[in-house]
Each structure stands twice: as C-alpha cells, then as structure tokens.
Image (cartoon, rainbow, N blue to C red):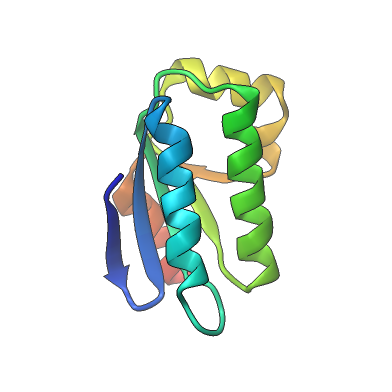
Length: 112
C-alpha cells in the first residue's frame, strides 16, 4: 500500500482487498508508531476495496481509536457501494467521517 505524506500532518493511505488489506494496515500502524508527538491526520482511500470483512472493520476501528487518542483525525473516502452497504448495516457510517474522494477528504481536514 502506498502511504503518501501529503504534508507533515496528513498521510494518505491507499488500501486494497485482502490479503493486502491486513498488510497495508500493519504498514500504516508502523508508520504511525515512528512519529513523535501527536498522530497525523489520515485519509484512507478505499477505492481498491471491493469487499470488507469483520477483521478489516476491526482494523479500521483500531486505527480510528489510536488516532483519536493521539489527536489525529481519520477520513475514509472513495468507498464502493458494496462496502458502503456493509458499513451502513454495521452502523459505521455514524462513526466514521466519509467523503467521495481524496480531494474532498483533504479539504475537510484542512478546513476544520
């Protein structure tokens, strides 16, 4: 998974379907651990995700929990309809801030 450093305080992570999803999330966690101080804001581009399972959801929830605890923010973007429907059923649409694309996610982080 490419992790792009948009700025000193914003990372953009591009996720893919399993088995890469779990590896991508672990890679992102390692990058966050390397930082000193507050966590960056993270945009997770989910354009490459066509399905999501409970393990994937748990990983994203752990990421959110870590970022909130370390004063970082999380935006999910470009979520496919099949994944979005799972997130709605699970009530995750109320927990995560989601946008249509990376540009909108970046703008929402920079404006708030």
